[in-house]
Image (cartoon, rainbow, N blue to C red; front, side):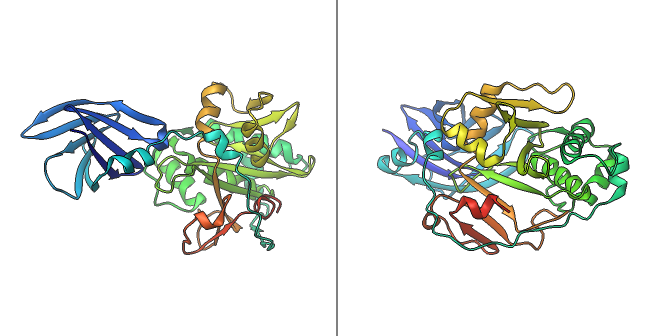
Length: 334
């Protein structure tokens, strides 16, 4: 007899039991009915899934399930037995590229007054070893090089409660910590660009799923010489070009949606290597929704209202302090 269960974990997980075997599905990570190694103790299935250990009692009526990280941290999450129809409806494979071709509704026509706290701080001119006469592109490149030289990217860090870039840099310096996640990398680089007098914004890139732990922060910075916004993946020190022209985030998204193979990744930091196929395969999943603050300053979100760009506003839940829009022009032009 088959049984199906839904787990509301950090991202949605589904379990299928068939003939005593257990299969796990996590649509967000494109994992579908993957057979899991299982041991049993006192009618409890112990499921080993990547860095997690799931303690599961399928014959017991329960609304919670225990999940432990391999490091030993245990927590409980909502569990629900579901029908076969509901299981297969929610575990269909998603063509992520086709999602990028969904047309924006463009029902929003309001002009949003974005603010950039970009008063020049000469101390950062000195730290980066540039001059006040340096052009914007030089400043952009030196900012990335400084970031990648001083820090390296890891999936998770312990600084999620620190929302001020200046405070984050100070704490990292005191602790001599060099490994931080994409959120922290973007927060610091955005702060540096603002202190160099540039217009800069961090952008949170997200998949179509609402329950996620698989988003990615990047930075867009305006270059006066080129008269356009340039995308920087602050986690890896990457910029992007097509035929020698730097790309914005919107342009990169469009080219990926068209399966364009003329995109060139430019590693800015020293000794930065990237597999372009694997990089873009992972990035495409996170280019469905975007969020940015109206006020770009040293704080992560802070007191600023957040703007979220989605293809269809009706599909989104209204969240406090968040303005949902479906017009790319109102998101990227200012």
